[in-house]
Image 1: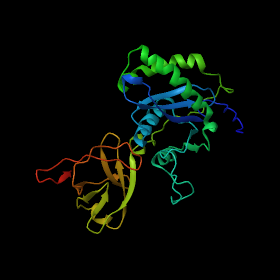
Image 2: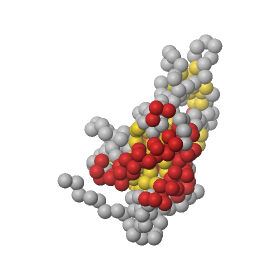
Image 3: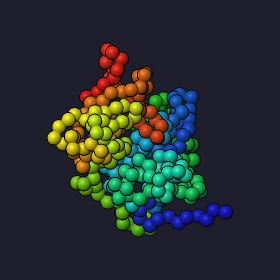
Image 4: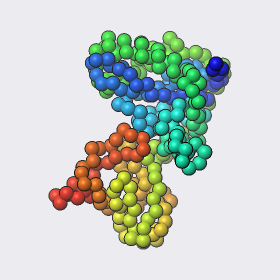
Length: 281
């Protein structure tokens, strides 16, 4: 039998996060996922966002909105979805670190993965309530798209919190303000390291990158650089924080279908030359 876990004392001490896939729009729209951020101490809905599927970039965007509004909580509490935890036994390290986990680590926010659905009962119970009340509200408003549903959420959250939120045991708010060193653009980009060859090339996402030769890049042969793939489609290669000039050659035989919702890595659409080869500068 699962032993109930006591609430935390303070707002921002522990924030439960989850994705609830459901027919939120019933037969009027597509099946989609509601990302839910709920404070453990108060059962207060902190952030809601409808997305097509649970993906790393969707959680990046939702977490960024949360941090810009409230500041940094002490910890997020999640399930063992692949966005939050590397579940392969062959992963490097103890539990491994996903891109989302790496982003939180850079911001000095803990990520705790629950061992069972019962352990994150607050957000699970909220999901059940939302699947009843929110679905009815969306139906009454005649909402049939994810965009319109997201526009409806702020008012719904205010009403929900007036009805169901509780008073924390302590009146202390443990959210910490963002500081000048918290670069959310880079933190919430997909980051991967690559080694530069002696010819100043590297590969990422089936694309061959050629660093433009200059006084800086010529010294980087055999050195490690960092790829930054941003949610808005921007892309950068950096070494010790300095952005490097590059050209790219896509080796894939067909045009990519655009950014994927999968969590293993982003897919990118590259411009196509008349010859059929795609190149971006």
